[in-house]
Image (cartoon, rainbow, N blue to C red):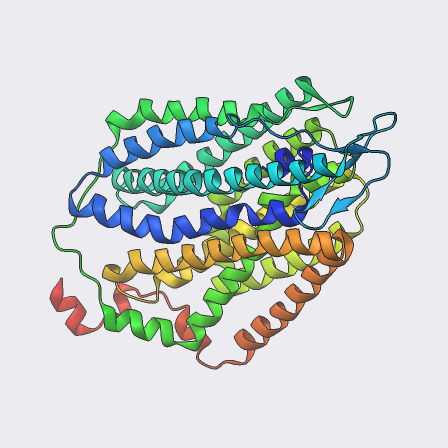
Length: 428
C-alpha cells in the first residue's frame, strides 16, 4: 500500500493515516464477530463470509480511476492534502488554478476511498486469520511445537507471495509523467487470487465450542492492575511500534534508497523465511535464556538496527538489518506470550492472548502513523535515530527493573508437579 500510494503522489503523512480506520474496525469488529460466531456456533460460515467479502474488497482498490500525478520539474508538496508532485525531466504539468483545485478535491476523494476500503479489508482479513488460527489450534490440540511449525509454513507462504509480487512488479510497468515505473497494482490482483485458495481448505476445518465459557474476572482485574504486567504490555506495544517500520515502511524506504522491485522481492522472501525459522527456534531459546532476558536482548537489537538504518545508503544492506529486526520481533512476541501464559489460569488464557494482541496491534498502527508523520516533518534519518534512542531508554528502564526487582523471578516461575499444592493434586 505505501508504494502504491507513493506512486500516486501521496505524502508519507497520508500513507500513515490510511491504516488507522482498519485499526478501529479491527478493535470493534473482531470481538463482535467472535462473540456472534461462538454464540451461534457459526465459525466456519463466518470464515466463508469474510473471505467472500474480502476478495471483491481487494479488487475495489483498483476500481476507482486514480487521478494522474501532477508532473513538474521542481519537486513540491501540497500541504493541504499531503501530495508530493514528481519531478520528471522533460515532463512539465501545466494547469490553471481551477484545474489544481479540481485535482486536489479528486485526490482527497480517492484517498477517502482507499481509507475506507482498507478498513473493511483489515476487518475481514483479521477475522479470517483469527478463525483460521482457531481451527489450527483445534486440529493440533494446543500442541505448541506443531503450532510453531504451522506458523513457520505461514511465514514461508507470505515470503513466497512477496517475492512473486516483487518480481511481477519489476516486469510490469506503467507510465507516470513519461517515465516507466513498476506496477504495484499487481499486488491487489495476486492477493485476491490467493484468498480464493483459502476456500479450498474450508471443508476440512474443525472447530470446538465451549458450552459455558468461563472467565475469572477477578484474576483478570489483578492482572491488569499489576505493575509488572503493565510494564510487559507496554513493552509489547513498543515492540509493535518498532515493527511498524519493518512491515509498513521498509519497502518504501528501500525505494527511497534507489532499490528496485527485485530487492524488495528478495527482502520479503528472506524476512519471512527468517521469521519462520525463528518461530521454530524461539521455544528452545526462551526456555534456555528466560523470557525477560530474551525481551531485553531483542530490544537492544531493535535499538542497534534503527541506528544503522538511519545512516544506510545501500538498499541491499537494509535486507540484512531487516532480518535482525524480524528475529527481534518474533522472539519478543513469543517471550511475552509465554510469560503472560503464566499470569493466570487456563480459563483466562484466551482473554490474556487477546490483550497481548491488542497492545501489539495498537503499537504497530500508532507506529505506522507516527513514522509517516515524522518522515515528512523531520526526515528519515532523524526519525530512525530517534527510534533508536527511545528504544535504548526503554531498554534501560526494562533492564533496571529485571535486575533490581526482588520478586521478578516469581513471575517467570514454571509450575511443576513437584511444587503443586496438595489441593491441586487432590483435584486431579
